[in-house]
Image (tube, rainbow, N blue to C red; front, top):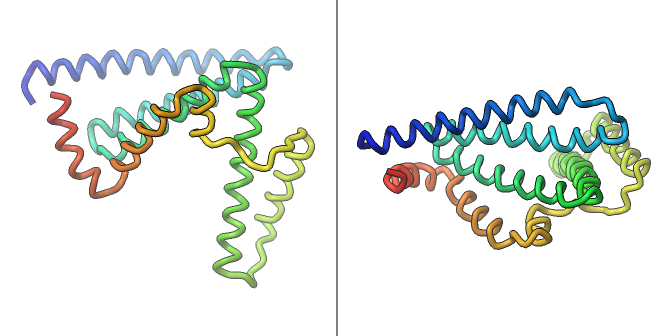
Length: 194
């Protein structure tokens, strides 16, 4: 890598670290804003999204230095966080629906574990997992969620008019996440960014 390119990349990372520190400070400030019980749910949505952004951005920086696979994974996750954030900020109803989607998605994770365990060991009981599933089902009923499934990120991207961007960025990132592609792409990526 020549000197000017190295200096340019160093400056970019210094600027990015400054922005990341500002995001961390803003996240901390938002966490202290828990006085209005009518809006606490929205503060929680925003802080969760911001926390995800910070974590994935840190992974992006680490991936840039060490692993094309990690960098691609972080890019994919940052794209999704961008879509969730835009969707939630478009309306209060969207923000509520995003919370519902998170609950439905979590329920789907535990349901998938249950099906997996049952497929592997049909005779083995799973009382703890059954209790968690029951609790999530009760919460779903209590808060009045009538939908059976969550909206996919691709669906949200479509609603926002960002589906082509999502589809193509997701495709490239997914390919770079694979072990063999990641090894080859690091050298190609380095040459492209010089």
